[in-house]
Structure formats: structure tokens, C-alpha cells
Image (cartoon, rainbow, N blue to C red; front, side, top):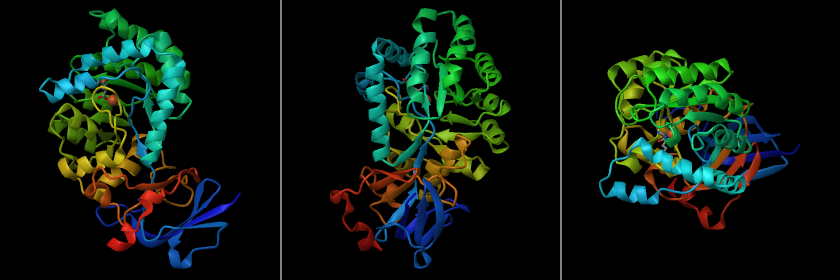
Length: 403
Ligand code: NIG
Ligand code: FE
């Protein structure tokens, strides 16, 4: 197995010992990769020899982004719905049903090609771990198809049969929950690690959400939840009570929600692309962090509420509009996502962790928020394998000039 040394790193975000703005980084650093894992981290001056050496030229290296919330297996798009929203329409959960119809009509090959395209798009933007949910099939066969396809590209597969009540079960929500917690769960659990439910007015009640998550747990899945996206509710406290790994959205949190989260191991995953794309108010991440809540950032890539796959874009919003520092936002998009997926092998740059690394065309991680919309991801390694190569066009020498 050959070794690779990335040296002359101006700012290395390790996330080790992260306690705020300036910690969790090393200056003038080097990283040794061996067999897909990080073998050594230290000062460039003390770097060991390696089979291959890559000069970072004073630029920044961060852990690959851990995007802990996405819906990448679907057919169609809802550009017209977005256009109407920008003209004043409100986002509503019911739009999910139009994607269900388009997804059911698509072949496996069509869904797979699109899914793989999204994964490549994400890699090019520095995302090396992605969680993928079902939720646009909503029948036993279609949900199983979606988790099976998702499992082809990630180990972080979530069964979200309880996304919304499908049109064929209109006014029979409890019967639909019987289906989700019975035959649909039986068909999907072998492909999934997680069970999720959209607990919101217009989707599933707290009592229904409890049934769904309890059934998933009984099948060996671990809970996560969509809650408080469209208004305040009791979903967040249910998620905490059931020991969910993460509760996601949190656009409308109450003081009681925040106190419950702060006293728990449940991560609150913010989805800045959703507020951006639905014109809802941005949640106050500062209030959450100051209260002691563990916060992650994810894209929630989906055709309805957030059709971005860019973690740098979400970081920029979190800094600009949610009150996070750039350091906190980058932590939330890497180590925070890893916590939301209960992983300790990703989201950090430390000996033993996976060698999932991103070399930026920038001297510091601050540039991810400071230069919004600019493609700053130059090179990406996943498990030590280069998956995005240096682009001559992007290399430039911005890093050294700015130092
Ligand atoms: O995470 N909130 C529920 N599910 C998705 C939206 C799905 C859709 O609109 O198609 C979300 O925002
Ligand atoms: Fe979602």
C-alpha cells in the first residue's frame, strides 16, 4: 500500500479539540495518508517521507463534508413550484406528492443515473459522506426500490416511508402508518440503517411519529426526525425522548425544545438551503450553540424545499444569516454531520480516521463563507483515493497571495 503526504498546508482543520473560533486547526501542517486512513498529522517541518508528496502551497485543508440529510432518489423536478414561491406562494408539505408520482413513473435506470449524478456533483463540492433517504415511493415496492438504490452509493440509508400520506391513502393516515410500520418496514429495513418521519402539520402527528420510530427501533434501525420545519410542534421533544441521533430543520424551535436538545445527545441539524428556497425565517444557530446544543449543517437536497447540493453554500448562509462563526459552520458541516450520523471515523483529520480530505483554493476555511458561490474545492480524496483532481483553472495562487 503506498503512502501519500500532503504537506505545506497553510491551515489544517482537524476538528480535534474544537472549542470555538481558532481551535481545531494547525498552521503549516502536513498529513500522511496510508491505506485509506490518516496515518499521521503534524508540523510540515517534521513530516515523514512518503511514496508521493503533494504540496498544498500554503492553502487550507478541511475534512470532507458530511452531509447528513438528503433525498437524492426521485424523478421529475419542481422548478415551477419554486418559481411560484418566489412570486409569493407558501411552501407546503403536499408538494411531495407530485414528486411521488414522478418517482413511481421512473425506471430504476433513470433513478440510478440521476442519483449517481448527484453523488458526483456532491463529491466535486467536497462532500465525501452522504446520508440518503427514501420517501418518494410511499408504496411497499417503491420504497424498497429507493432504499435499495440508495444503498448502492452509501451506507447511510434512511427509510422515510412516513414522509407524507400518499394520495391513495387520503383520509386514512392511520392505515398508512399500519402499512409503513408493517410490510413496508419489513421490505426496507434490510437496506437501511435509519428510520425517519416527517412530524409536522400536514404530514404525521406526534402519536403517528412515535409509532413509526418505535417500529423502526424494534427492527434494529436508529431514529432521526424531520420536525418544526413549518411551525412549532412537539416533534423535537419526541425525538429527544426516543434518543434520535438527530432532529432536522428546527426552523421554529421553542425554549423547551432547545432546553431538551441541550440536555440530550440528539443533534439539531440545520438545513439552510430550506429557508433560502422556501423564504422562511432563518433559525438562530447562535441561540442553539450558546445553549449547548450540538448543531450540524446539511443540504437536504430534494426537488421541493432545497435543491442545492452545495455544503459551501449552506455554510455561507449559516454564517451570514444564522449567526454562526465560519469555524462553527465548518465544524457543523463536517464533525457535526458525523455526530448526526453517530460516526467517529469521518468529519475529523486525526490518525485512524478515514482519509476524506478537501484541499481548498483558499488560505483559510473562512473563505468558504467569505467567497460565497465561488468553487473553492480544488482536490478531494475519499478513503485516500483522489476523486476530484486539481483543476489547472482553479489552482491559481490565491492562497499564497492572501497569506
Ligand atoms: O426535508 N420536510 C419534508 N421533506 C423534505 C421536503 C420534501 C419535498 O418538498 O419534496 C424536506 O424539506
Ligand atoms: Fe428532508
